[in-house]
Image (tube, rainbow, N blue to C red):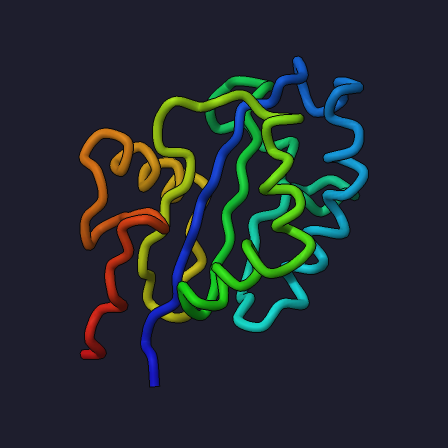
Length: 154
């Protein structure tokens, strides 16, 4: 039995001036559907939500930049995260991301192993992404192109 889960953060810089910009409308209109799909996906554990009625994280602003949106979630494994990302309705949005988001120019997704039961804070997730951007992938934090195996159980 595994003693670890996989945490992930991804950020994106919107083409719109903020989440309410008309260019973002189709993305925003589908956000609840995509989030619900995540929550109903096999292997889903948790996702970051703000305290608004929308139950997403679009109002959270750790970068003090209204064009950047953040997503943090926890999954049972790399496989369950990848299945959700690439084999569900979510993949349509991945394919079309250039319609809503600018090229970020540096790592925008980071994943890392956490002890089962641990819920990462937004600050922890931002620090992990920052570490990946500065140091590249390692056992501490990595991306989907450079995967590291789950730590061996204690």
